[in-house]
Length: 226
Image 1: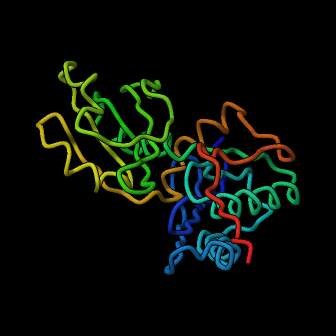
Image 2 (image 1 turned 180 degrees about the vertical axis):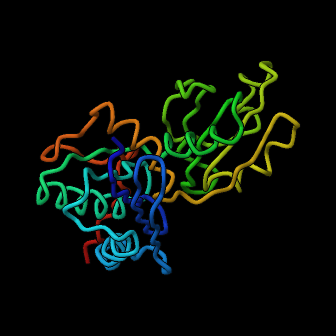
């Protein structure tokens, strides 16, 4: 039996919500303003359910993006997801943002190496690497891109697929035939497949204790003493 899942993506600039039944996306709602997660997420959830012709009580679970990404956005998404799961008595699945991007790219390119990239600052990205079976070949890390970043994998003669919001800055460094660039903004629809896999495996997170995968601590500056 296919589960009816609500997916929430709040790790990036756009707040994205979708309803899926198995692998099929029934409805998708996304914010039109950048970083408006807190003010829009509840409305987007209501619109997504209405468009899909479903009610809260019909949901079998909630899937949420787990980071890395925007600290504030991740907290907003997880708080909303936990509240729904507590209230409805349904499980929560947390999908790493880098994993979600790799699943998305792998569906199109098949036998290749995949490197998910989420834009950080300057030439830094949050990155992870995967083989064609989605086994991790490079750990989730904050990486400063250089011309030599992918030298280790070039001898494999396999396509190196770079995907995510960090791809734009990588184009200036990598021009060989081995590289494929997939520019995409992470959406709740990218959570559907990995979320479904985790749900069927009952890989649920603890509602009380789970926190987002920030990867790096927030950059908080203290006000100067006058």
